[in-house]
Length: 301
Image 1 (cartoon, one colour):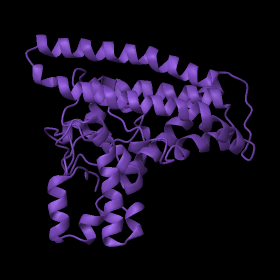
Image 2 (cartoon, rainbow, N blue to C red; image 1 turned 135 degrees about the vertical axis):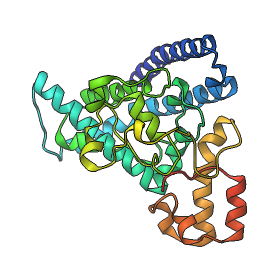
Image 3 (tube, rainbow, N blue to C red; image 1 turned 45 degrees about the vertical axis):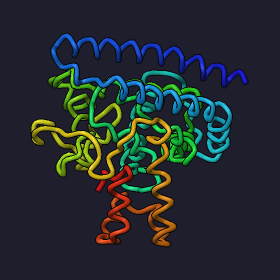
């Protein structure tokens, strides 16, 4: 119970900080003559989904994830380095690499995309978009792709938690059009410029710039795209763009759509194939086309 209370306290502190920054950015854009940069109803929906996600996340970590982490850790390399510059740098780099892998798979596997789609479904890019997350994130067990490799290396669970939460906090500041390019930092770090491309829905913007803190993984593995090379960025999904700001529907619609597709086509591959697998394989199905016109969800291809 104490761990749950600590998690809730953490959520409240950072929640107040992030909401304050969101308000400040909204005021900034209004003074700059761009009030459309923030939509009040959408901002409230984003904050609501973020609050739902973080409450479930905090409880899941406190009641289950940390114990599963310790269980797995005993079967790994049991890296026991003392706290110091080298071990902290190693932890930061490892955390970011495994986030890259996790994030890449979120865009390539329907089971993971059905959750991550919530975050990409906004057609506006501002700090509140960072909070637009899905409360099912921990319940679909995608987190094992990020947490468990750190456990197998042997990092202490508290240090792993700090590294993961610090990465997520850093990524909050990537969701903005307020900050332009950042010079030499663009070479190494993920920046708002790089992340704006990641949220784009044009063909040359989709499935790019997956890094969390660093952009080096994208440069190494060929998923990097420079904002200057893609023209005007359009945010949102390529199809089934949500027509609602109901936080529950933003969280659940695409997840339920995935199960509907599996039942309709009797094809279990839908769970682990690309988010566009149904459209690619069963294209031309008039019933599916009608569903697409009403629903919400595909972007990754």
